[in-house]
Amino acid sequence: GAIIVHGAGLFATVLLPVSAGQLGKVRMRLGDQDVELTATTREEAPIPRGTTAFVIAMNGDRVEVASLRSLDPIAAKHRARSAPPQAR
Image (cartoon, rainbow, N blue to C red; front, side, top):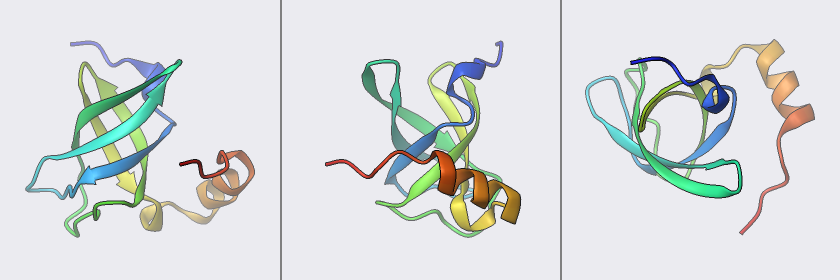
């Protein structure tokens, strides 16, 4: 399937931990809706429940995410400028 780019570059909240060998689940905002999606990652260390992850790619109802700790300093600076205020 085609990669849907509008989901990439967004942030998601981890609902079920995700690691390289374990599918997880995240919630993210797409347009005016909160959606729950299956998540994958290439990271060996689990991205724990309740943390914020960065969406690298989206394909249908599955997203590839990265932990914020894995982002390089340039991405971290961008995140600090563009991250929405924490809600809920």
